[in-house]
Amino acid sequence: MNIDYDPVAPFYDRLAALVFGKSQVNAQKWLLQFIKPESRVLIVGGGSGWILEEIAVEHQQGLHIVYVEKSAKMLALSQQRSCGRNLVEFVHSDISNFKSEQSFDAVFTGFLFDNFPQQLAGEVFNSLSAQLLPGGLWLYADFEQNSNTKTVHKLMLKAMYWLFRVLCKVETSQLPHMNSSFEKGYETLKQRRFYSGFITSRAYRKVLN
Ligand SMILES: C[S@@+](CC[C@H](N)C(=O)[O-])C[C@H]1O[C@@H](n2cnc3c(N)ncnc32)[C@H](O)[C@@H]1O
Image (tube, rainbow, N blue to C red; front, top):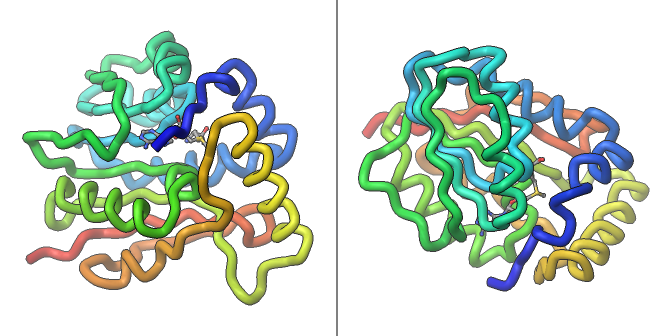
């Protein structure tokens, strides 16, 4: 996969805020309430790392975070963040090539899966799911399209895919269907919609075996 967020790393956060205001940030911040103290957390595609500072507001210490980012420039920005006294392991890798020897209490994916075509999304889902402990939490935020999606949001999605194809070599042009992936083996603890329903955040729990 050729996807590369390096060219937009210096301004990605400002661009996202310009289009969505605080919605993308709030959608991910809302998920942080579910992280339990002393957890081992896998964050995938955390971008510039602002989420690490938000986590440190809620949990000053005690978390072991593994932070996997494909973009070297995004990772470099993340490494400059204040993470409190949490232990953060930064990993420069495509998530497709990442496999932890130790499982996680929580997996956090914010606006990651919209980058993937359906098949790859399924593969990444299966790999991450295998690394999440039974009873563990999957904290998920992304765009969602359904029969109620407003025309303006459909157009925005098209424009975003065009822009990110040009800037970051994102190869897909439609959202993968992720709900069906979570149907088996996961229960929804809580969900909330943002940006008039265009963005959804869900806290899932992996069912016990
Ligand atoms: C749309 S940005 C979202 C960043 C952040 N979650 C936020 O909302 O500010 C997607 C991020 O996922 C990363 N990413 C995309 N594909 C990836 C992959 N296969 N493995 C790891 N990271 C990936 C990109 O480098 C980028 O930083």
